[in-house]
Image (tube, rainbow over all chains, first blue to last red):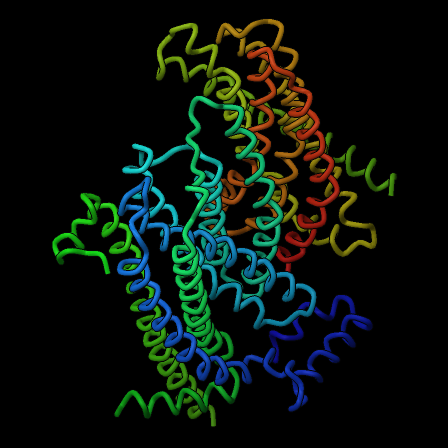
Length: 278
Length: 63
Length: 222
């Protein structure tokens, strides 16, 4: 309770009523808003995460089966093109998760809900891992396909800069000790970064077309077979559900840590202590 | 199913290193993430239990 | 509002004048680093000429980064920052004034020195004014983006390194258009689009960055 109202005293009145309105909605048992309260969200996340994880596992198995046993050999690239079933979903997911982080950052700043910031925190490591996977698989795909591990292509370069943005977010939120400031500073950085992501992409693309000498055309074969597209989508959904499951699990731990002064966490800890002894 | 044998499958038309290097490292990273997620949760719970025990002791002495 | 801006401008200029060795430090860093590249690459004139715009721009970016941690640090330590944020004056106005002075004492000297140093790289004299012009047009954006980073990392341990990690990826578009304009001119291509985009980026940064900066400063003093 203490943390919730800190910083609000500076501008009482309108802002306080706004906050009270949100808290009233959070308490209302019928409203979906109640899940914006960490106490309500913690058990919900615990119930939902295994389902998402199971769905992700099923989709991943199906996607891998399609990728290796159903999808035909590519006429131009041979077998190595099977890397794109991992590469493209990872690249999509890394960009998508950064935008989701920025979204939760905006929600947190506007509605002053702590849980939104925690969601942004929970997403960042997973987004960074997808970003690294996209870079790594891109390099291993590029070597046999265009003869080099790395080209300064617009897509690859933007992906690299996105990796730096993730690292910046992680470093900033871990360097600031006060959780309230870390939350909000990280959210601000994610918002500024997400405005910059399209600018970076277009500037790099423009820069790349100007330097014709170094550019390699990465456009894939125009006629991508339907089965390839389906495989890619199945893998993308697997990556998406995995990210949701991991974020929910991570946010649960974060909630326990942040809310340790409350009675409900005390009760939950008692329950966990019994479980641990068994 | 268009692989003639398992060795053809692992060979990936001579590109086995690139294909399995991609999938191997990626899934290893995912496994690591899950492992660290589990370990962090365990560590946090243990730390919070210790913290609570210490706090209960303190308040006990006060009372 | 104008009065707040002018008052802050005067104060910051006076402070900058008192700490003028600091200003010289960023400039000397710029000069030394630009002069260091030929030792690493070799004195071959054609090669030097082709990398000159990039070297000057990257070094200008690093030099602008070097001075950034000081932007709000002193005001935080002596409590001025807290007073300023509590005052009823709109904070974006005085933040903008602070940033303007910071640019004046770090960005402008670098832009003015750049043509002299580019001469060492055997760059054609015709593009030297353009090089200075792109730096004058681009460094305000760098300072504004940097100010957000400086506010976010204010009072954080190892803040200076963190600041570099936060700001450098965001500064890439400015670098591309700034150095690109000079390279386009060297290649005999029109560079108007580069300058237009550089200018547009500057306007967008002036309009948006101070708000983010103020929000980050409020976090830092709480």
